[in-house]
Image 1 (tube, rainbow, N blue to C red):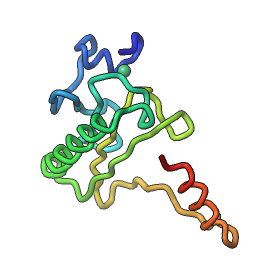
Image 2 (image 1 turned 90 degrees about the vertical axis):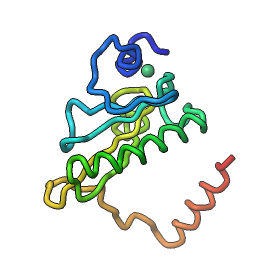
Image 3 (image 1 turned 30 degrees about the vertical axis):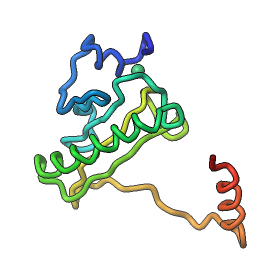
Length: 138
Ligand code: ZN
């Protein structure tokens, strides 16, 4: 629990939300500033700041809820696709520092784009980066 955390306040019902789902570990509600209509947030009921701090079992519960709701949201708003996103840290666009997944319904002509891949690797650099990552996996 974090005193000033807006999502903890939503869990405690101190702030209203348009709740669409709740179970023991997770809560889901509609984003009040959606990318598209039906854009939902799946949060852990317990406070964790980001993916690094969220225990595996809580993340598992969050992704199960995300799948269940993705199917429901896609049907409900007649979406052509769904993006799942989780922003971790300020540099990645995290605004609320309480673990959450975005379910973003997408429509064929909604005008939104994804990140664009760039050709950033120099010769052999991709293998070097893969080795560095492998060394950090616990
Ligand atoms: Zn919180």
